[in-house]
Image (cartoon, rainbow, N blue to C red; front, side, top):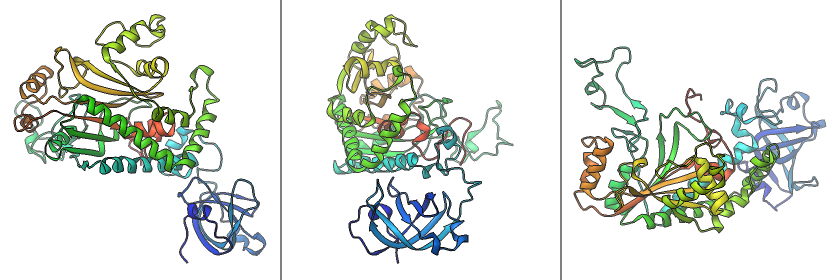
Length: 477
C-alpha cells in the first residue's frame, strides 16, 4: 500500500478506510498519541496507538525525531484542534532518534541555536513554514515572468567582470596555492590559470541579461550570486539568490510599473497558497514582539503588512524630494538618526528609508533619480548631468528591497562613465558593443530573493530564510 501525504489526509472527508502515513514523530504522549509530520503541511496528524497490543520494545523506539510508518483507519477526530486522526493497526519504526542525542526536542529553541543545527532545524514548525513559503514564492517568480512571455536566462556563475564595480568578489582559481606562478614583478601570473585570466564568482547576472534582452526583448535571471563583503549583519549573506529582469525598450517609468506589479503578484500568490504557514508565522511574530519594548514593536501584524503592500499604490518620490523631507524631519533635527542628513548627495541608510515608508508616506515608496556619484556606472545619466535614472523600492520594516535603473544606452556616455569610475573597458568590450549594434532604451531591476522571503515570513535575520547560510567565517554544512 502506498502512503498518503499528511496534507491530503487532513483535508480528506473519506473516512473509515485504511490509510498509510509516513513521517517524523513530533511528540508521543501517554504511550498513545503520536503527532506525525511529513513536511507537506505545518499541521500534524494524530495517530492513536493501542499500546496494550504493541510490543514494549517497539514503543520504546518511538521518540521525537524518529521516522515511522503507520497503517490504520482514518476517522473523524474527537480531539480539539483536528478534524481527522488515524486509528493505528500497524506501526513500523523506519529510523530511530535517540532522545539523549537528538537536539530538536519539543521545546522552544533560540534561532541562534537552530542556526547551529541547520541540517535539522527544518524539522521545526517555524523553519518548515519558512521553507514552504520560500518554495511557493520561488514558483510565483517563475510563473509571473513566464505568463508575461519573459525568457528565463541563465547567467554565468563564473565571470571575469565585476557588474557592480564594488570589487568585493570571490576569486575562482585552479592554481596551486602553495606554489603560485609569478611574473617578473612578483605578481601572480593568472595567464597560467584555468581560464587564462582572473575570474570570480558572479555578483550579478545583469550585464549578461542586458545583452540577451537586446535580442529576446524581455528576459529574467533567477540564480545564485556571491558577495565577498565582510558584513556580519542580519541583512547580509555571502551567497544569495537574485531575481533580475531586463526589458528592451522600457524606460524608468515602465521599470517601476513592472517592479510594483511583480511584487504585488508574488505576495498575493503566496497569501493564497500558504495560508496555514503564514498564519503560524504571524502568531510566531506576535509572540516575539511581546518580548520587545513598546517602541520597538511593529505597528502592523505580518498579514497586515503583506496586505498593506497589496492595497497601497507605491508612492514615487525623487531622491531630491526625499532629502528635503529627511533634512526637515524631527528625527534628523533632534539628532535621533544614527546618520544625520545634512546635504544633498548623502547615501540613504535603512533608518532613512524606513522613516519615509513607515512614518512619512505610510505606504511603499519608490525613490528615483539618485546622484550619479553613489550609483553604478551602467545607469543612464539624466540631462542635469548629476543624477541617474535609478530607482529603489522601499518597504516597511526592511527598507530597500529592489534596486533598478534605466540603463545607459548611449555608447559615448557609457564610455565616459566607465572612465570616470575606473571600470575596465577591455574586460567589458562585449558590453560596450551592445551599445554599438542596435542600441535602444532598456531597463531592469534586481531583487534579492532572501530579502523578499524575509519580508513575507516576518523573520528578522536573513540567515533564517535560506537553507544553509553562507556568512563571514561560516561555511558549515
